[in-house]
Length: 100
Image 1 (tube, helix red, strand yellow):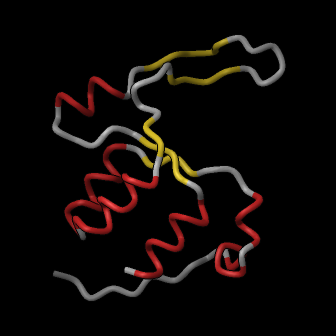
Image 2 (image 1 turned 120 degrees about the vertical axis):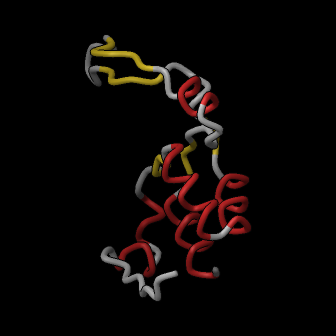
């Protein structure tokens, strides 16, 4: 019930420079919040994204490949009825949100 205005802090996404940056991860709680705000937009975002919450998640040493820690993002989301974590292209996300 609030009137809000969203400002893009990183203009590179709007100018198209964001295409060279990696994907952005959207956690289950953020997807659930998006569903509460606009189900149609949430469905577009989830359809365009790639589910990663059903895989091994955690922090890995980029040099050695050794895991610092592994964690489960799937079970807590499913148990609470939340969407499973996904990654999505920054440019695709920006486009969906800009057109909403």
